[in-house]
Length: 144
Image (cartoon, rainbow, N blue to C red; front, top):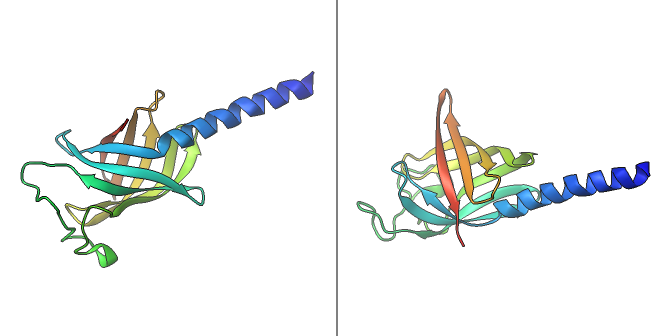
């Protein structure tokens, strides 16, 4: 009886962790600082860590049709934003959150420390970006 209970408990824990990770992968709509849709990104898993690359830059007032990352550092500099990996290294922290990630802000060229939390319904992802004492939170919406 105890073996069955333990097996069931581990099965439930494992399936909920798998659900959370699989819910993180897929396409997301990013929102800018004005909560306007700004891009579509694909979140994918590689070697147990999660990254996101830009699939499409959505039309926005004041943003060119095919923007490039002018202020970005190193290998990111002057690359098209479409196709750019702007989030990497997110590691599972618990059932619905990830930590130790890095995110590139194409507007400022800064690389930020990032944590992510998935809503219980799997439809929104909150990303907390920080640099020193300053932090900001952005929301991504699951794309259907």
